[in-house]
Length: 518
Image 1 (cartoon, one colour):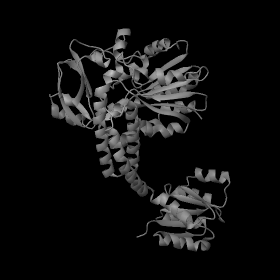
Image 2 (cartoon, helix red, strand yellow):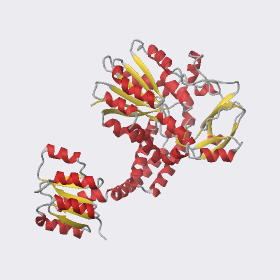
Image 3 (tube, helix red, strand yellow):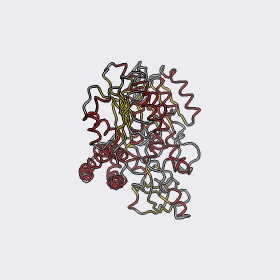
Image 4 (tube, helix red, strand yellow):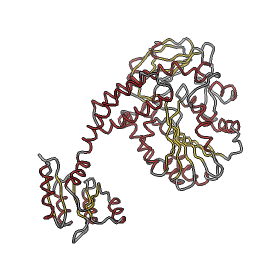
């Protein structure tokens, strides 16, 4: 059986006999045609894996033949072979979706390399990726056990995301299993690291801490404000670093990426805490103190993120930026998104534009409730794919493209990530205990200590004290917290859903990206 079926189209095909024999000796089956008309008819009636197509032929040209082939077999790879190096010819060819091109005179090795790229690409990538990851596995394992600091943990997580995406391309279930075992081990070690260091970071006496939610604007956004050059700060709720990597190419098409960085979400990794901390520049306990009427605890009625603009205004004033002209826009539905698109040019009059986009968080929650979304986003790979598809067709993408040719800066960030939960753990509490699956606060909580990081005094975690004797617990790794009542139903319903609020690499180490116009 041949490796692949090749159609070689050239009006001087007799001169290529030696090259055709070379390919046949390598295991390829080669059919030949001397003009575009015959080539188009052959493709219609026969199975062909790759077409090698001469650009200059009598009758219809190579580019015309290419167009007709694509009309019949849009996914068929075509390699254009040409003497002409003119830029317009290349542009036309690329625009017509050629898979590769070769400049005459071509030698057999060049043709073979092109065929391997097109036909054996996936297999070769899989083999190379597997080999490279096997080599990297040991160094990652050693790094995990070498007491990494917060900067090294960010770098380690970036490497894990890189390998996750590479292994995804290889489509090797065995390697994926090995990788996920290693990532689980990484999350176990990360939990120990956070348990040991988190309280130190947020202590008023702290001398060293990573950039966190409450210091994000101070260190990563406000220094880039310039008069006469609008800055757009876009916060996409619940965007993991791997999801950013999925949509990065769409941004890169319109913008030049200057800096790709990460920071740490505060605990709980939940919107009402992390996002309010971002816009206020304060820890939740400080927000409650300074904005007592605006802050609401989990068990209180009313919206928990209604005053972000007010918090932002106060932070700008404290930073000496109170004179800046700024706008704050929150998008929660498609109608709001379309209004954003229409209003983008008006925003260019402002120094600072903040856009909060809620879609990814809503997707995560909807996936829990809707069977069809569980199918569409069954695992991390499909979750990333769905995020990419959303952004590509979203009003947010349209809005940013609208001003991509203007002299602007854009910073993309998020408030927290999410993790796919797999392991249930029982928690017992009173009626006031919060319902979140990744963290809880309440009085007299009963739990397995190995499953959570507990703060019996919420102030140590920079959190308000809702009630006397209230404590907070944060789930580690892929654990989700369940009540004993109706336990089995609860476990089955929430297992393998994406949740946030606890301690994992995916929830806590999150992207902040700075870019500008090309």
